[in-house]
Structure formats: structure tokens, C-alpha cells
Image (cartoon, rainbow, N blue to C red; front, side):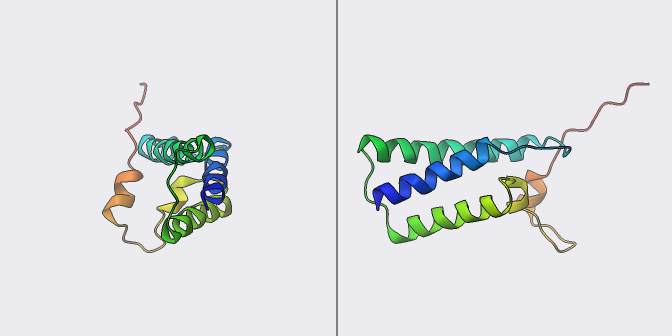
Length: 106
């Protein structure tokens, strides 16, 4: 189970690192969230490879697999994980979608 969890976490890191933003705007909090996810998954991968990881529970393995599946289905776009299809957005989605205001040169 340690090897399977390490592979899933490695896939998460690869998908986030290879994400291309295209023409979408940079959102600092989404970028920071993606960074935290990648670092956490990378640490989990390194611990598994080095033999210092404890055996993950079935629930941890399932959550990692679901996150990995979601990221691959969204092509690595962490912002889409927090997208709300209704007109009302939850507070965390609003916070993560916050962008600094652009300065207009006159």
C-alpha cells in the first residue's frame, strides 16, 4: 500500500507541475494552493521511496486517488476543483478566486 500511495502522490505532483495556464489569469491563492498540494504529495512520495512512510489507511489512499483522478480529469487545473456551478459561491471558493486589482496606466 505504501508503494501504491507513493505512485498516486507522484502522479498528483506530475499533473500539477505540468499544468499550463494558457490564456487564463494568474490567481495567487490558487497557485499557492496548487503549490501546497504538490509539496504535500511530493513529501509523501519521497517518504515512500525512502522507506520512512507509515502504511496509509484505506481512506487516505482513497482520498489521494480521488484527488489524483480529479486533477487528471481537470487537466491539472486546481482552480476548477473549487469552481461552483451555482450563482452562489462558497466563501473558500470566493477567497481562492480573489485576484489583485490590475493597475490601469493612463
